[in-house]
Amino acid sequence: MFNRTTATMKLAAVACLVAAPYDLLAQEASHDHSHHAGHVHYINGPRDDAPIPRPGVKLSRGKFALVVIDPQNDFLSPQGVAWGVVGESVTENGTVGNLERLFHAAKDADAQVMVSPHYYYPHDHEWQFEGALERLMHDIGMFDRESPLETDGLAGSGADWLPRYRSYIEDGQTVVVSPHKVYGPESNDLALQLRKRGIDQVVLAGMSANLCVESHMRDLIEEGFEVVVVSDATAAAKLPGYDGFEAAFVNYRMIASDVWSTDEAVAKIAEARGNLINVSGASNVALSGFDPVSFFQGGTPLNGSPMIRGEHAGATYLFASEQNRDRFAVDPEHYTPQYGGFCAYGVSLGFLLPVDITTAQVRDGKLYLNVNADILKKFNADFEGSVTRADDNWPGLFEKHAR
Image 1 (cartoon, rainbow, N blue to C red):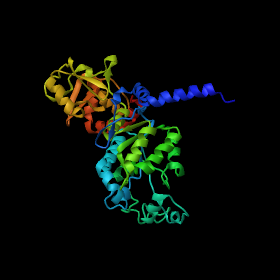
Image 2 (cartoon, one colour):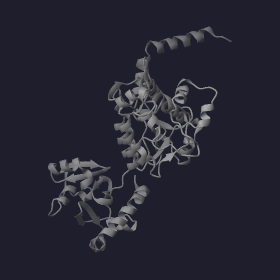
Image 3 (cartoon, helix red, strand yellow):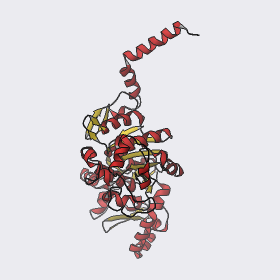
């Protein structure tokens, strides 16, 4: 039975929400998300953020994948058939270079990379009806391949990878899923491949922003994945009165778990790789507190000062002088010991062992440590062989023990 009093109260409550929606939403959006400081990355600079929640994504080692949509010539090459409408957006966003940075960061972090491509075969052109841009893609021969079973004519075609991405995609580790046929992954095996690898977080990028990328985002969200979109590693068609990238960006922000710039994504992917550093207990100090730069300066290594410190790869390093700290900050990888500061000979045997700082030696511009003087002699007796074996073993030890 209709209750007029209850209905009136509900209408009044709605009126209150309508009168001050932004204040209420802003309070909700600011809860636990103050690090975003009211701005979101947009192309080459900040943009006032929407007064809505921004859940964010904390990438977890082994639980996330970089998914790149359509990194192909027809979208990203000036010779591609779609360049006339997407080229301006690709250039503005720096999409080509930003996608390469994401590929590189993911490979450096040993993260899973997946590519969801767009291919059309001769039988696809027999469809009885299409949407607007489906029709356009068919009319201009976009992503055309001669056969689903043959690769004749693929190399260098519009359906082929942009050449600068080939080494990342064809390294034997990247998963290339079956092609999506319209825009979203409903018709391919992307979700299956992600689930089979225990992945539940997706860093999403590629082409085209308001078509395939947005459709992948929507479906993956519906499938229960956390999804973050790297906005300046996408781009879209620009037509008079119609900006596909702006349309996509609004929906990225309203639907995805977060929206990142490429700079943010690269930093967060690197952080998610984890670290494996030989440190001293709760203090988290590496090299037993010795100044890492001093090992490269000849003479006796110097104790670092607790008042002069720097951070790298999850460990704290102490320095004997501010000058040495500054040198370290410019190129920390040059000064940090090999194999995370664990015994080099132990790593060559497949073990993580502690070290004696008196065994430290710099050879070929790299700092090596060992567990004691006797092991140091064994390490040096076959230095090149020991280093080769340690280099081979370190990735597996890192994969097993990194945190």
